[in-house]
Image (cartoon, rainbow, N blue to C red; front, side):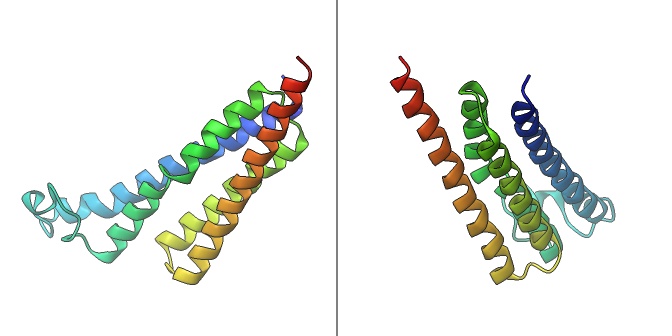
Length: 144
C-alpha cells in the first residue's frame, strides 16, 4: 500500500469517526430528554419540531454527513483505485478538515456565516478532488 493510499484511507476513517461522534452527541442530547419525559416519544415519531434547538443542531450536523461526504467517499475510492497521488491525499484531508469545522460550528455556536464558509470550502475542495480524479481517468485512458 502506498503512503498516499494510506493517507486517503485515514481521511475516510476520520470522516467515519466524525459521523459516529456526531451520532453519539445526538444521543447524549436526546436520550435524557426522553428519559426525563420532557419529550414524548409520540411527538417525535414523525417530526423534529418538538426537539429543542441543541438537539436539532446535532441532528442536522449528523444528517449533513450523508450529503457531501458521500461524494467524498466515492471520490476517495476512485482515487485509490486509480493510484492516488499527493494531490488527492492532501485534498482528502482538506475536505475532512472542513467537515470537522462545519460540524463543530453546527453543534456549538451554529454561526451561519462561519458554517457556510466551512461548507463552501469543503465543496470546492471536493470539486478539486473530483477534477484530480478526472485528470487521472483521462491519463489512464491515454495509457491504454
